[in-house]
Image (tube, rainbow, N blue to C red; front, top):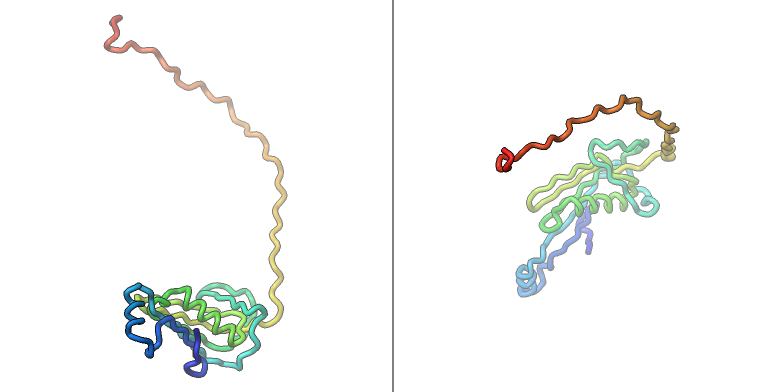
Length: 170
């Protein structure tokens, strides 16, 4: 369920609306179902572009190497509360918002988790030019190992038969 709350913002709610009957709200509390929201916001540096092919947005955490030339389009962030205050929901909201804005990836992503709130933020980017050629791993040729050159092992200690103290031969 989504609704537009302000320009550049989306909200998903899993709670009953305020006009719901109090009995329904009480039943949800008794049954233990969680209540939470996720909001995604953006601040654009450039106009949004067409969504990426397939609608898939890559997510790179802070410090990960993207390995491609990119152009920054804007800043995106997501807030999760209640039962949706977890890394999966805020990361999904970040990627969904990035797809709406035409981003190929969200880079420099940070995710902060609290007890009832979660926050994720990143930079929305569009890749420039073709992707780099994939590195193809070539296995080095293997040759047979020479047999080991070891001297023969010395015989170990041999067990001796000893008389037990309770033996009648003592």
